Length: 189
Image 1 (cartoon, rainbow, N blue to C red):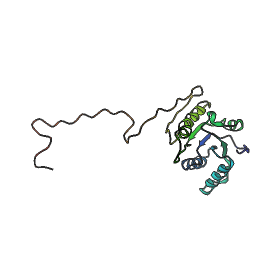
Image 2 (cartoon, helix red, strand yellow; image 1 turned 180 degrees about the vertical axis):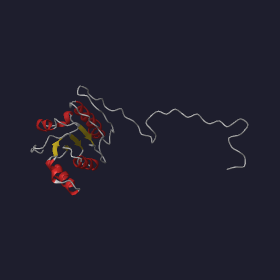
Image 3 (cartoon, rainbow, N blue to C red; image 1 turned 90 degrees about the vertical axis):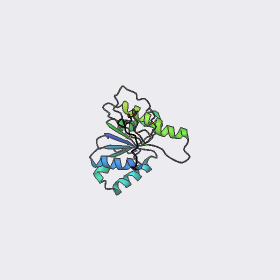
Image 4 (cartoon, one colour; image 1 turned 90 degrees about the horizontal axis):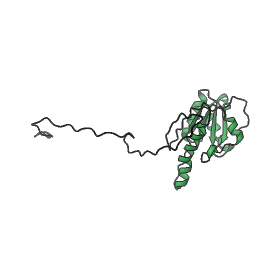
């Protein structure tokens, strides 16, 4: 999106930077002096909106100058990046995937494309980056990896959240009352 590349190339990529969590993460990375690329749907209009929001929340001109926008489509392999955007991301070491799609009436296929396939495409793209320690923290998958350049990531194994730990727990043995006493003592309640 932004063709002015006078600063060092971005070392962090935030996908879903236009969303609630993505905006705050982008602001924090800029405040820490990182050069950040933001992957957005919607092109330059979304980037301008994000830049206004960042400025309204305290990002100064130096921090905003360290921001690069790229057009992405996480539903496509390679994130749907143009050659120009792919080249601009050659120094990316950290990938933060906060892109997800939630909406009433969203079909199962649309949800899968954005929330599962998008996470897998992001992981595979990060796995192909030399020196990339990509962390994919999508609300849809909540997964994290440290990919090696020669690896391809497998889709995450779905976990059902039941309010308990995802680990399998062994049942605890029940305490047995001492011999000669009953589990309920008489007269007390």
